[in-house]
Amino acid sequence: MQKIKYLCKVAVLCIGIAMAGISSTIISNAQETEIQVQPRMLYINNWDTGLSISDSGIATVSGYVEGVSGVSSTSVKLTLQKNVSGSWVAVKSWEKTSSSRTASISESYQVSKGTYRVVMTCRANSETKTVTSGTKTY
Image 1: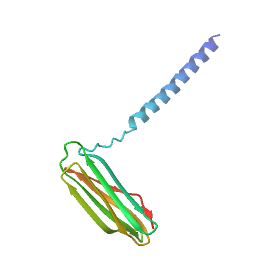
Image 2 (image 1 turned 60 degrees about the vertical axis):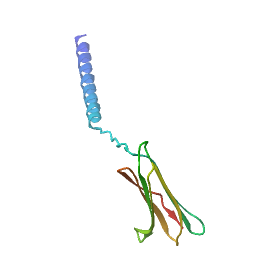
Image 3 (image 1 turned 90 degrees about the vertical axis):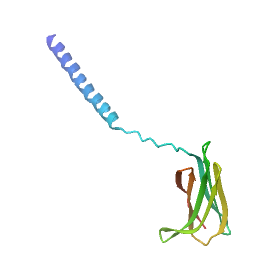
Image 4 (image 1 turned 120 degrees about the vertical axis):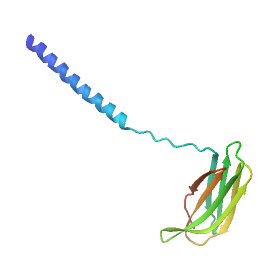
């Protein structure tokens, strides 16, 4: 009977040690996890850029920025780029500045065969954001 009690105590002790090891590993892993927090834009509320190319090679580029309430100046610059031997080369640029909280551009341009993208740099007051569109091939 004493032997059974002794074996039960040893079993409980082993289970306790195993549980302590598991919980310390969980706590250790939880403490090592960092949460990445993206800073919020102060002046830019919304933005968008786009590129489409028709079957006849007409590229339509667009860009838009909207500032938060109280923004007094905005701008949008679009640069159409072509992939040439693995490097992106500027083909044409457009820019619009506004004394309001929104600015937008929509332009068309005849392109030759190749793969293109648009890089938009937009600004609201002193804050700037650069966004790249997806690629389109003609």
